[in-house]
Length: 339
Ligand SMILES: *Cc1c(COP(=O)(O)O)cnc(C)c1O
Image 1 (cartoon, protein in one colour):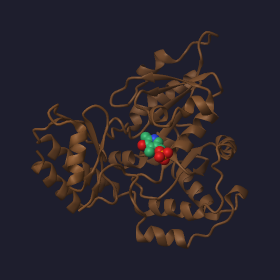
Image 2 (image 1 turned 180 degrees about the horizontal axis):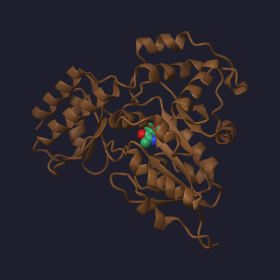
Image 3 (image 1 turned 45 degrees about the vertical axis):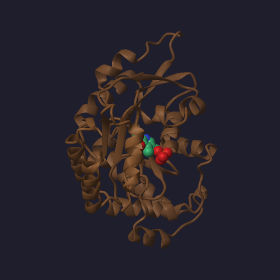
Image 4 (image 1 turned 90 degrees about the horizontal axis):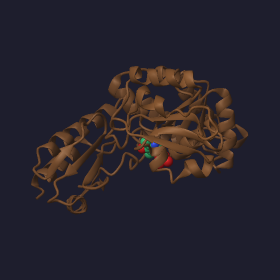
């Protein structure tokens, strides 16, 4: 048996999704003529109560476009030190936006208004102008930790008061929504920009959508073209996203349950030093010094379970659409027998 727990990006389209892709009406989206892309953008925007959406090839692109739209060269943005926009987007903030980043040390990647406020620079020519706050929900390096709306509200208030834009890297926002039972519209009213990945837990092969005001998305469309992200008959891909939103959101709960089962099993193993709380579909754990993380990953792979190291002595498991109950049971057996 092969169990691939490296990432929730490894999923393949389901037969229903392939059928939806195959039969999608398409056109040239750079001319605005792809009706399936237009449907996806409108569908997500109205779900979140936002004015407009923009379909892009990746979450890196939606985040980088948002940062470009919400900053000017020489500005500064505030983010947690674990933030994907900072760590995993190849230095794109400096390259694309010529902006600097103030990194804070939140609780498993989650910031509060009190954390942020002292780092908003005063209006003084010595300091870069703080113009943007970026939050991530769920937090990848936080082990899938999530914010609730009541935790975000004071941050949104602070941003409004200080004249800062607020962007959400919501690569796994639907995992948070399913975990909290909160409504997408509550997010729409708090953020200036929201990036949502269709190719993570939702199971589409490609794509992310940036949501914002009409004005923001108009500018974002221009930036997407400059970044080389203007796609033509992209409706074949957008159809997968529409299918995912219609059929593969509620089932994220199953991924969360599977992650919890794996986390519980890991916590019982002598070679595991600690397991981060399992809140959604990510399990991050630290191995005892006697079992080097690289060795653990090789041993797991020898037994058909793929996973990745995630920092010194740390390993990450991610559950998703293509991990079924029997694979979870199998993985637990491998963990118990591993020595
Ligand atoms: C995966 C991910 C992204 C976007 O990644 P792409 O591979 O570019 O689609 C952004 N933020 C977070 C937190 C992610 O996990």
